[in-house]
Amino acid sequence: MMAPVDLDLAQVRAFVAAAEHLHFRRAAESLSLTQQGLSKRVARLEEALGTRLLDRDRSGVRLTPAGARFLTPARAALDAGAAAVEAVRQGGRPTRLDVWGHLYAPLRTVREALDAAAGLHVEVGPGRDLPGVAAALARGEVGAGFGRFHTFGESLDEGLAHRLVRLEPVDAVIASDHPLAAEPELRPARLSALRLILPAAAGRLDFLGRFAEQFDVPVLPGEANLGLDHLLDQVRTTPDGFTLLPSELPLAPGRGLTVVPLTDPTPLYAWSLVWRRDRPDPAVPALLHAFATTGRTRRWLEYDPARDWLPEADATEALAG
Image (cartoon, rainbow, N blue to C red; front, side, top):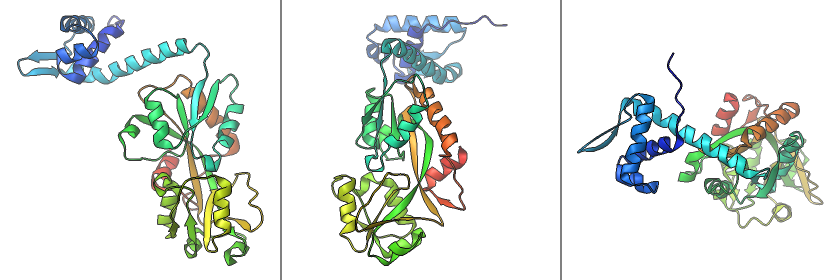
């Protein structure tokens, strides 16, 4: 059997910097080391592992086959070390969980999951939207996020990991004097006779945009998000308008509005937990466990493609889970 090797993370960090820069001087500068100091650390790591990790010649620095194999787990070792240090430094400080999608009341789901997680110290805060929470995660300001995840085409989403934790049916909210409001339930395709009222600018509403596209529903352009009451007032005063809201949202729409369930198929809104892939907060595993435990009891992840509708990426994840 080969003797175990106790990795020195300072040496591993020197190797990773050299592998990423492919230039010893720039790598040394990035770590505030001399070039000689960085070279010595890499050499000692190679000696401990018994193999060369980097080749240097006049053309530059190159990873050896062993170095290429070592690079990914080396990065993981540095991340694990950073997470261990952060866990100690926290000293019982709660993990920050930012939520978005406030019109759909994400705290309903978060509260249920946290109530089932004894000893999990979480501080919940507001996030503007997914890009905003992704930026806060990248800066290390929050440990995790909760809301609807989707690819938003920016560099920030490249370092994110996410897991689907709840699928929630949505209902149509329609002016009570519209003929469709008298129906006990509606197929989404029948809503093409109405116009979907957006609660905010379309670029921030991926789910509603995909719903409108799937079921050929005209859209009324959204303006500033002024809250649920403002949205309901818009529906109330727009004869051919409607909006979508989660079925379990505690909603008393008041005079002039009717809530109608959608079936055949039933649209589902996907809620996810989001965190940094390269720097996962120590509380993320416990958060995932809390959502999974509550989700099994509440049947949060039931999805039948023959009965329900999800945007394509959400459907793929739901089936894979």
